Image (tube, rainbow, N blue to C red; front, side, top):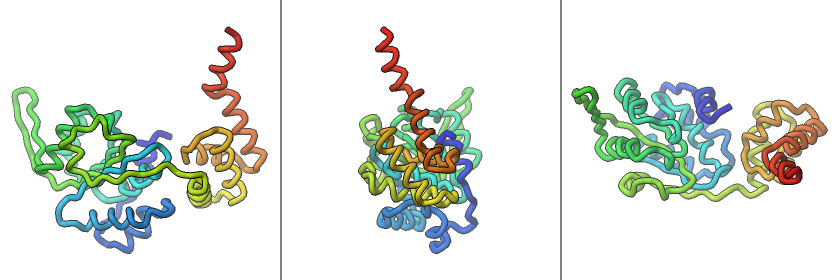
Length: 247
């Protein structure tokens, strides 16, 4: 399942986003730790003026989990930096007037899209000229985004964000998060433990999604071992090695 589909599937409408106890129970319940960052998000939700937050760090560092949480907010809209197009994003902003704009991998946005986003964050104004006609509107929109790095972001755009830098999970963190998330799907702790160990140490992956995929198939520890061995046997690295041997 793609990140975009996960975001859509995970969405829940919350009728009153300012009710803090409800938000605390629902938004970030799949994230272990980071209590200070959770509180910062809640303060942003309650701010009278939009406070934009950018989470920067390597893959598998809980960034996307925060975006999944923000997608539960009413009047939120998600876009991938790699998939966004100026016309598509602008049309949505004009038509739906979202209160929260969620952007994953914002560093992959085109410069044109970043310029639109800068105007939205700086003035709240969205303007577009198409077929010799100009339209404009003003929005009050919070922008929450993730990035693996900031080198490809416009400096003025970056300056509009409150930027938080994440470190990659250590195995202990990865294990805790895996057990927590898989446990919510009814996966026994010993199975979740085996999955996390195999994904981290044998597959050399730090992506929680790999744990989830395996958990949906495995019923026993032996199943976990079989699935991981199969993935390794037919993985890209394995095939590349076989091709080199044949040549």
